[in-house]
Image (tube, rainbow, N blue to C red):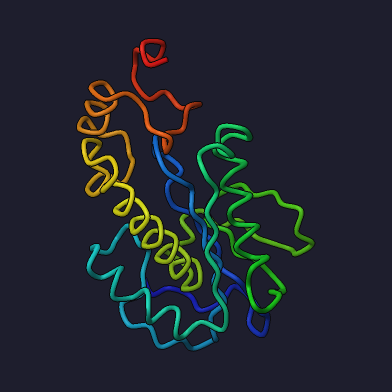
Amino acid sequence: MSLLAYHKKGRLEAGCDEAGRGCLAGPVVAAAVVLPENPNIPGLNDSKKLTEKARNSLRPIVEQEAIAYAVSFVWPEKIDEINILNASFLAMSEAVEQLGVKPEHLLIDGNRFKSHLNIPFDCMIKGDGRFLSIAAASILAKTYRDEYMDKIHEEHPYYGWNSNKGYPTKAHRDGIRDHGVSQYHRKSFTLLPEQLSLF
């Protein structure tokens, strides 16, 4: 199935998606992208369906083709304060606010959204596999977050963030067990089954 260029024709729509919701460490990152009605982005798809190489090669094309795009990071301290669901909503709202144009409508990946923005929206389940703008946002959110996790991996190589990107793999949890938690970990998450032994 080919992805749709818009939900309603003739309206300035921004696709929004986030990356890193299920991670134990690092920020949740969201992107908002406004595309023209006929963007020239061959191979654009849901970032989860693409290889890392394909995502990285598509990122500059998305940025070049977009009418506007923005990326927002919400850090672990804020995630711990307001919870990951609200942090995801905040990241998407901040990305929309940073756009160089004000969209008339938002297409949100997923089934829930709330924000202080006075912009109408539709939640699209599996929207990153249905709409080009959400797929573009998924690629930016994923690649910007992966780039950041690769960077902080150099500070803490024993967690394996260059390969797991902060998700709860066995190697990541073994690193927590052996080295404790870092300033990048989300303290409100269950970092190990034996949580109390960490603090």
